[in-house]
Image 1 (cartoon, rainbow, N blue to C red):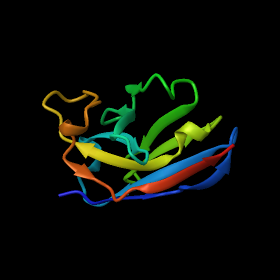
Image 2: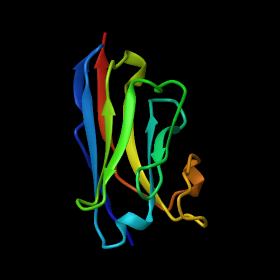
Image 3: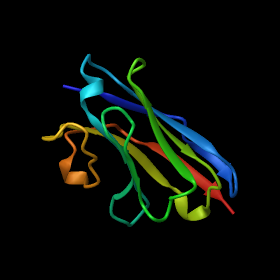
Length: 127
């Protein structure tokens, strides 16, 4: 069982930066692939970024490539999402997720493949 708590959301002007953190409970954090998703009002939850158990492999949605960076610190049981050059269309509730992988080292990009979710943190980008 893993519990995830996101933090770091807030209101920022377009072009600004935020860093989201997701703290995980449990002693097996390093065994999980981690991901970030977001959901804007009236829209479906969408994939943002993901990394494998070590953080050595990452994947990003096209809309955030070059602006967002996912990383993790297994010693601190924490995954991060550094968001730069923010745009109004990045406004959403951001969720982190943890997932078991059949093949160690895999990245998970589909929401249905994740086992645990945080409660979300609001990110609002003003124009």
